[in-house]
Amino acid sequence: MSAILTIDVKRLPHAAGLPLPEYATALAAGMDLLAAVRDNVVLPPLGRAIIPTGLQIALPAGFEAQVRPRSGLAAKHGITVANAPGTIDADYRGEVGVILINLSAEPFTVTRGMRIAQMVIARHERARWREVETLSETARGEGGFGSTGVRA
Image 1: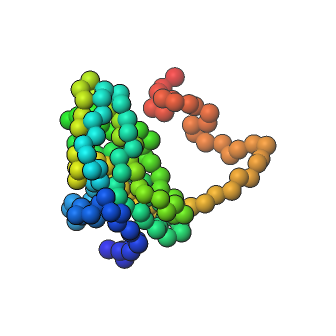
Image 2: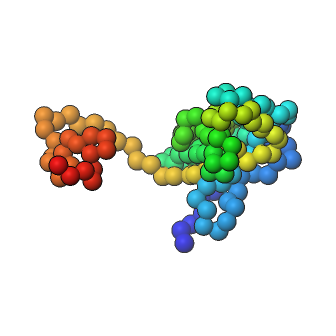
């Protein structure tokens, strides 16, 4: 098992009384994010809103936090994260917000403390471009969307 990364977190006043994100099981990749709303937020069909978590984080360089949908909300209620996965950069110090969208035909109510998304902490690499005249050849070549596994 690898070492556990420690991340500084600041709880804002509107998150008082809510637990910090935590892993639900020993092998879970994501931690649940909770809605730090004072009043219920109703998402109408096709409506969206930024739901506050009441948390600010300081990620180390070389890491990002990915905000992803919760499968239960998506399957049961049609609620997903509009920009999934949303990325929180290591230099961002504002409040973590979750852009929820209601893809169902029914209104959906977000309540205080509701598990609204999950956050995965991931390493990433920085890259630079090197412009070239030709690229290396591959078996796939320039085959586009849906081209793999199709026989001519």
